[in-house]
Amino acid sequence: MKVDLFDFDLPDERIALRPAEPRDSARLLFVPAQERPFEDRIIRDLPDLLKAGDVLVVNDTRVIPARLNGVRRRGEAVARMEVMLHKRESAHQWRAFVRPAKKLKEGERISFGDANESAACLLGQLHADVAEKGEGGEILLDFSLSGPALDEAIMAVGHMPLPPYIAGKRPEDAHDSADYQTLFANELGAVAAPTAGLHYTPELVGALEARGVSILRVTLHVGAGTFLPVKAEDTADHRMHAEFGVVTKDVADALNAARARGGRIVATGTTSLRILETATDETGVVHPFAGDTSIFITPGYRFKAVDLLLTNFHLPRSTLFMLVSAFAGFERMRAAYAHAIAAGYRFYSYGDACLLERVDP
Image (cartoon, rainbow, N blue to C red; front, side):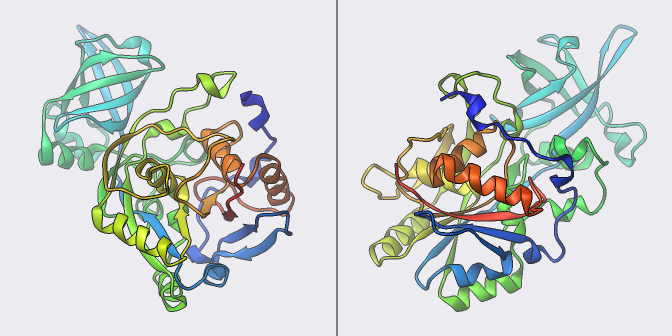
């Protein structure tokens, strides 16, 4: 499909720069299947829209401070570099995006830390050599530290990787260290939050459980590639970056048992949906999974695992808007987004959400 079909106009003031407070007071647009009217709700209404026996699947990845400031020295010349980690390859290697990429060559070293910060003592202690240079500013970094020592160094010198549509409008602050983590965040490795999960509170979880809705956890370490624009003219020519995910045997067994009892699988966010669809075979059976996925879902895809999707409102021309268009119908989602814009819904990572029923092609 032509990527232009997934474009739409979004007023700048619709981009949320802070989350709703409390989190479950954000707005929720219910988009039912079969052309029933849209319903304007709030996140706190979610238990009323689900049924006893349904299973909510959440992503328990935890965001790391993946934005690193460093310097590259070449003789007397010093160049400042901004590095965004996006996928761990080994105990000491990360794939990353770097700016400015043209000032960096394979084999050169970047030293991390900022002389204006308390972490300045790490400058000269945390280094990374450029093992490979790829396209679009992507590099493979070979760090001087490994394993937990590298993790600790990144936590010390890194910054919370706010999406560019937020970071370009205001600086990161102390609130973001909590605001940009979900209630379920546990497994370190994401460089972007699974944002649909940001809406949950302990009170909402309690109400869902009282309704008879169970909550299961999967892991997908969200990469910075989720924010990359689709530069291809046709979706067939776009390459997704791989992300590491896990569905345990216990979770797979519980999902299969719930489906056998007639329960619906409700994915919290596109990340949960993508790892579930990766782990599910053509007959609808969910299998244990641990590995990389680069699944790219566009209209025409036949969903195997997920019945409903709770997700935020996404960017024009993005792979995520393509995914929701596949899930709930292309024209249906264009109408839903037009309704949301006209009704003043807040968009993107810190914005409002929609609950979508699946429409099969």
